[in-house]
Amino acid sequence: MKSEDIIKSVHQTMSYYRSVGNDKSLLKVSDLERAIEHKQSELIKLNQLKKVLDAKADFRSRMLLSLGSTIFVGQFAFIMGGTFVFYSWDIMEPISYIMMFTNFTVGATFYADFKKDMQLQTLRELLAGRSARKMYKRRGLDIDRVSQLEDEIKELRQLLNKSVY
Image (spheres, rainbow, N blue to C red):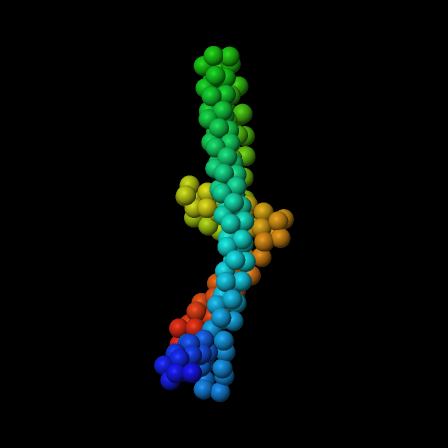
């Protein structure tokens, strides 16, 4: 065997094994890379499921807000039709007060339950988040596991990057 072949094999072996963390631990880089790949594949599956569920939750929140807007437009049309076409204001006035009181009560109850700003964008995000959490629970998606995997992958990458030849 030539000395060049010996040096080449030593370099190959040294590139395969690296001292990771403290000087006393010796880990195979391939083991770290395999662990990262395994965790990344699990994270990708969980993120794909999360993305699908988030899209469904966002659609559901937009539909709910559209339904609420349609109800308000319907109430307005009912009051206008009843006042000017079918009946008079004398008949429609108490009905409109009851409708307003109901709308106010539902809005105040919602605000008391969630204690968020009453802006349309915030309301949509609030409804989407609430719906998404229900879907996560129903489908068995653990959000804590997703964040844990992200942290573990980050730590493993830092450990791999800190390794010394």
